[in-house]
Image (tube, rainbow, N blue to C red; front, side, top):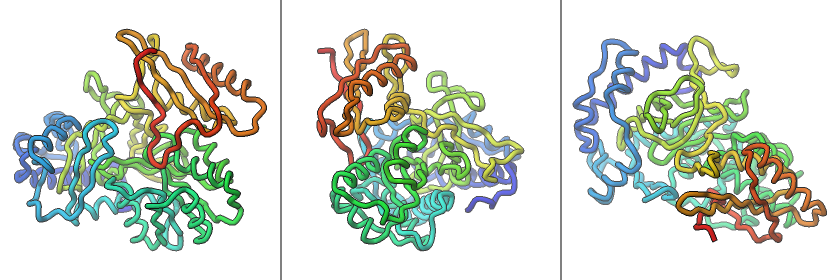
Length: 434
């Protein structure tokens, strides 16, 4: 499936209803979902089918999947085919709990590659591009799907596993890389190393930074920092999950807005507390059903991602697409919010403020808590040889005060003291009050 295959929302929803029916029929062999599938009835028309499904199908949570895998090791009971049918193994990072193991059949794997191709097409990446994958190539799904999808599109693919930052930069220069795939944080780290090692970016034909794994790619302030560090390539965001697959791609004409790959996912946004569907454009938790990944599917999966979804009705996006859009990308995680003196603070809000201040190389947030109160303290590492470090600290403190109506202490630390990250950043440190 490609953009333009659906001439209208009605045609897309008809496809979704048909795919949902096929998915549910195949769940009779899936012990995790068999009882649920038995209760679900499809309607007589498209809207009835989709609305009945949402009304009658319970949510799936990561905790339930983890408990099932613990009770039925090692892969759980969420398998629609015999174990011999699966050829791919991956697992989640485990940053928010026990890692989940995930299997794919060749057919399901092909669906995931189709979704990644959507990401590349929207980014303008294809045959002739030279793509550097600055990853460790561990068991995480995104590395492998991104690599194979790029290869199938005719790109020259450079695996960066098992290398340090300097070696990756050297490989990029020697092979004239045009596209870099990494987390936003690691793209910043690579640029930092390049500057310290004297690499000449003018000889690098890099034109795209495709980032994921963190919300930074859709934050305007972070995008600006990345584009300035790399002297011009366009930042292109997307997101996905191991237990779901590649979910979104950035709108080519609306930076910071992510289109849902709706031919493969049925998307909803709910209030994480009441579980009711939120109004169009209101913030809530993204819920996904994998319409075409039949081997280990998820039905109404609570992703934990906070989003604002803009529905497309009769109109199309300015880019010509009819897919629904996540305004501002991933706003945060339902389990990431910190309440400080009655104020709800998400890491993405702190990221936005920090990146709006020039001269800050890296930062870390310390959250001190006791039984009733939480306090924030932010440490920043300032560019070497800056003579205005006190002014930068004061500017950041003032911006926190304006944004949160809170006094957030900011401390400048010596050069190189804060950790650097090759993958997802872990900048938030929680501990009891000293």
